[in-house]
Image (cartoon, rainbow, N blue to C red):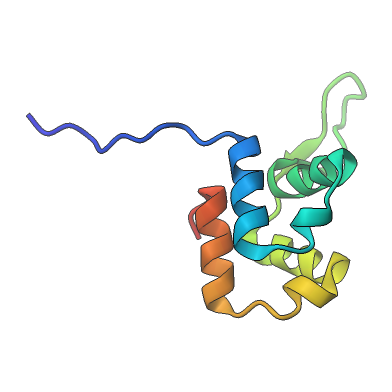
Length: 99
């Protein structure tokens, strides 16, 4: 029988340590609030259009990888503005997000 390759799940705290040790700033200087905003940007959902019925939620979606990269570059231009494709690949690899 073939079994799928398995690995331990990676928590956001472990990802934070990897981001700090791999890239340094801005992650080294992040405080709790900064991490919350960062994870919201990566995993959060954003309303696309309001619902017709006020008792129902509107349509939502997550940001695409290019949208996230664009926002990170605007928020932290001194850091993400210098990222080339290799750095982005490593960044997304740490976050375990397929491109």
